[in-house]
Length: 120
Image 1 (cartoon, rainbow, N blue to C red):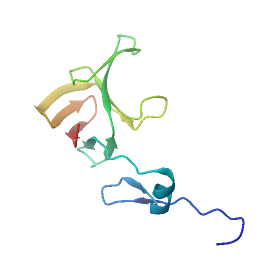
Image 2 (image 1 turned 45 degrees about the vertical axis):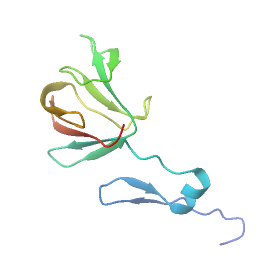
Image 3 (image 1 turned 120 degrees about the horizontal axis):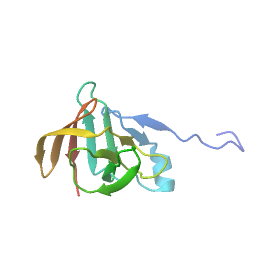
């Protein structure tokens, strides 16, 4: 290593398309938490993961109204982190195709998704 130069923080991408931290970076700054949810878009296999989710409801003008822990027609899925920078948000749910304790398949205004609960 050149004196005064700092090592680079490296990211790699695994087979599922998720970013992983370099092992040296993980050792210095802590372990990355394992995601609790995985969302897969049917048409192209786009995959997103998050630690938490919320189902958002909007009023007639499209403004935020409330958030819930349960899926319902008209709600939009938001994946953590919550705030100005979030992992993913779907358009409003138009149909719940299948729902189990650890899985939901649903249609939105423009896509079909599968949401897997990896752990709670």
